[in-house]
Image (tube, rainbow, N blue to C red):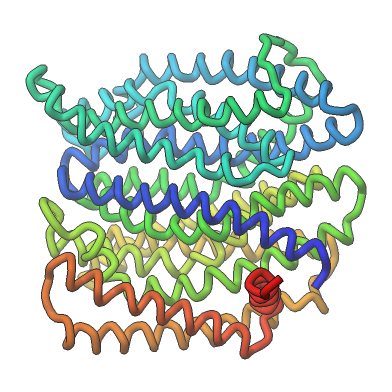
Length: 532
């Protein structure tokens, strides 16, 4: 192991811990939402309203902006010092306020026609509810873009935990909104579901504001600086446009899915959303955490022209993704129904909703490893200043997804399978196509990964993951006979030991088969626990 790879794992570990807090709060938010509102008319309207700014957030704010800003900010800081880097940050913030503030006005004024285009299957009442929430959420993109910029600055300065924790405040605000606002909204004649949109917009602002003290501590002071022709701003904009296409595959697929699912009856959008939320847990814990840590390293290596170090770091990041996401995939496949029962099946969320969401989760898990590795690959291309390959990859993946949707939906209907499951299936297919093209591109730009253990680690972790799935399934079935019952307590006490078993099988199998990252983590733990 090189010195750099353990550093990557330490950074990713810090991000994972913070992300875990946020994801747990996100699950709590979804549980409360399912309990209060179920999976039907009102939640479909909210998800349709929230997916528009959320899609743009992933593309422009946390996706393309981060991928373009971090390498540029790092290069300016390496060459010209902190003062020039702070000037660049001020110019980018000023540009975001103007551009995204204008976009917020467009969303507010055009909420109804936007929703009519986005969810053409909605009836008049459902469409109007979705439009109302779109108006409330119209400034969301500006807030999360500022939060992503702050996260990029702090990550460049090797501050990982606080920025990764900032999304937790979004979930805190959403939960507080659902608890506090419905009793206020009902006497006013307003639908309680509006509490979700109000909580989301407050949470979006909180994501940025909680990072401001840390920025100030490191010397940043905001001042208005309108400089659209600044070379750094121009470079970021030049990288962002193709970066949008390079990161667009998954989000455009979700956009298409929502349009089609709106025609499949109440609940379809909600089932897909809840299933994809569970997929986002390991993506966020592992894929995004590793990608964020690796982007800081790749940007610094690129600024120094050290492509060999970039190649080795990327190989280590992909090995780490295999170590963590493949067993997570196996666990979700084996335990998809009990997980959804535990998290959501109470209140207005019924057994039929669990079965539908579990089916979608099974289809999404097929692409989990591909989603995670793509999160690592794409920003690496932008650290290199390469835009063409991610654009081609994304375009091919999106085109395949759309074509496969129209091919598979009739097939699923004829087979008696709910057609919304075809949408989840084709999303996973598109993720693997995206991964394959990007993998070819990394070999072209950085050279072969031969001799760096990538393929060997993937094969070893595939074997381990099969063992995880089998052991977890058998263990859960046995515990179901020992601790029967549908209540939350029996469900929890059946699931927790099985999750622990899956973790132990993963660790033991990875160590036994000689996975490098597993040995590095075990060595770190041994050194930490060794008596001084």
